[in-house]
Image 1 (cartoon, rainbow, N blue to C red):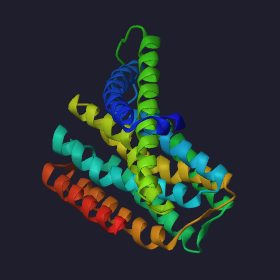
Image 2 (image 1 turned 45 degrees about the vertical axis):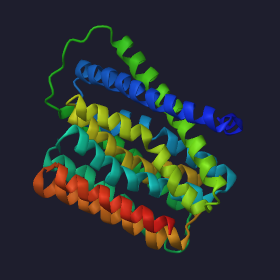
Image 3 (image 1 turned 135 degrees about the horizontal axis):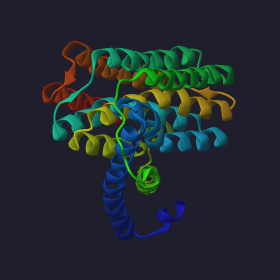
Image 4 (image 1 turned 60 degrees about the vertical axis):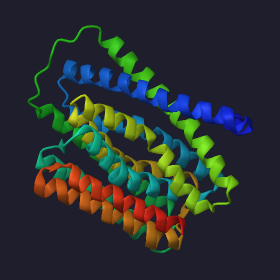
Length: 314
C-alpha cells in the first residue's frame, strides 16, 4: 500500500472516500454472513463477535504490530494498541450508541468479558513499569488470550441458542470472508494515507502510533455500527469487547515477541495507558450498573476522548 503516498493529494482523497464506501459495504457483508453462520451452528452472536469478528477486525492491529516488531519500532507498536483500544472503548462505542441507539448485553457477560478488558490493561501497565515488555511476558499475554478463546468456545457447548436451518452455508462463509477482505483493504488504504500525512507535519513516533490506532480501529467502527443498526447487538458488543481483549493480549504480545521485547515510553505508560484505563472502567461501569449503554454516557465518552486526544497532541 506504500505506493499510495506517491500519488497526488487529489487521488489520495478520492481513494480515501472510496475506502470509506468499501468499509461500509464490506461491513454489511461481514454482518450478513456471520449472522447466518451463527444461526446455522447455534452459536450466540456475542460469542461470534468476541471471537471470529473481533479477530477479523483486529487484523490491522495484528499486522501493524508484526511490522513494528520486525522493524524494532517499539513506540509505534505499543502506541498503536493503546490508541486503538482507547478510541474503540470511548469514541467508537459512543458513536455507535449515538447513531445506532441503546447497546445492551447481559450483566454476567459484561462482567466476564469486561473484566478481562480491564485486567488486560492492568497487565500491560504492570509489565511495562520497568520500561520494557519482555519476550516471556509477551508469551504470557498470548497464552491468556488462547485460554480465553478456548473457554468461550467451551461455554458455547452449553448455549441454549436454537439452531436454525440456513441454506448454502458456504455462500455465507464466502460473504463473511469477502466482506472482511474489503474492510481490511479499505482500512489499510486509509491508514497508509493518514500516517503519511502525520509524518509530513512532523509528529513523533509515539503520537504516530496513537494516531495509527485510530486508523486500525476503522473496521471495529464500521462493523459494530452496522451490526447495531441491524439490531445485532451481540455482534456489536462482542466485536468491541473482543477487540479490546485481542489487541492488548494477542496483537501486542506477538509484536513484543517478534521484537524480543517492546520498550514502553513514559508518555505511553503514565499518560496514554491511564487515560485508556479510565475510559474502559467508565464504560464497563455503565454496562455493569445500568445493564446498557445509552446516549448520555455515550456523549460523555466521546467528549472524554476528544479531551484526551487534544492532550496527546499538546
